[in-house]
Amino acid sequence: MTDASTHALLNPAAADLGAHAPKPTATTPGMTEASLVLWTNGRVETGLWESNAGSFVAKREGYSEICTFVSGEATITAAGEEPITYRAGDMVAMPSGWVGVGDVPVAVRKHYTTIND
Image 1 (cartoon, helix red, strand yellow):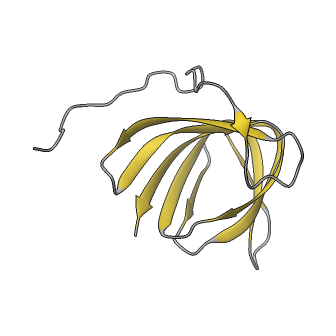
Image 2 (tube, one colour):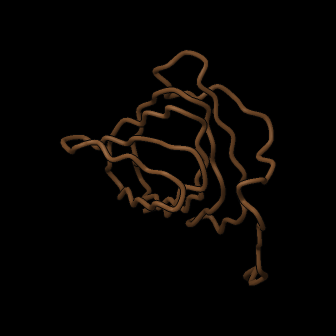
């Protein structure tokens, strides 16, 4: 039986994401991240993610990601493309196979949805 109940998170800017942990793909020492999964069905996952300032490498291998920024700022540079700076309300879609670098000058929070291939 499928879970068809509503999963809500009100005021995502103020939600407690729990303790931060070191970001494994960080290129800046001391960069940390935290996340909160709102809902998943095994193929699709949606929730919140945040990090403190720093830089990191990113790859979308085996899944695509769609994000809406909630707070803060991040400049994302996809391989072979010009950098784009995202702030609260901005959206980005990164298809499976996407590779890039994230530069976070101040703490950032985003809503994400991932979809496994």
